[in-house]
Image (tube, rainbow, N blue to C red; front, side, top):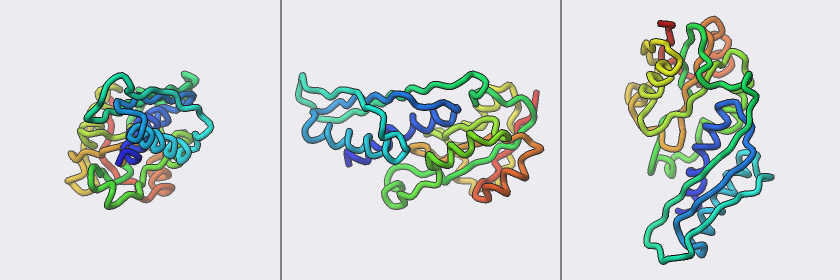
Length: 208
């Protein structure tokens, strides 16, 4: 449905910007469809998700396609955030760390069948606020293992897998960021798992 399309399209960039430690200051949509009725329904979905994320106060700017007849619908979303460089949680792993996963990777029909997602805006904000959390990466279409290896490479670490989740989760698409990986300082990992028992170990980041 157009409403769900709008919600999921804005969810991913919202989570990615929040996970960086930034405060979201602007959201823009580009809907490749006529305003009535399709565009309006997509925009309503985006606005509903902004409310759900506690960002309903932001003015949504954007455009629809009124210059030609459309037979398909495209949706693009831009999210802009602002962060103090000292609080930025990107390429910020300096010492050996334990890599945790959080949330079940789901996509497509699974989102309709099981709409209650473990990865929420509130949980991401909690992770960002914790000092032992070094970096948070929403998982995309290439799966947990891909993101884990990319995170290690970007920080110049080696990733060693020791996954404690279902093996099928490691390569499965997480659709609209239904799962995240979290790098936690090795010495603080027991405290983190105690605070978030739903988290599961994916592996370890070791300095090259």
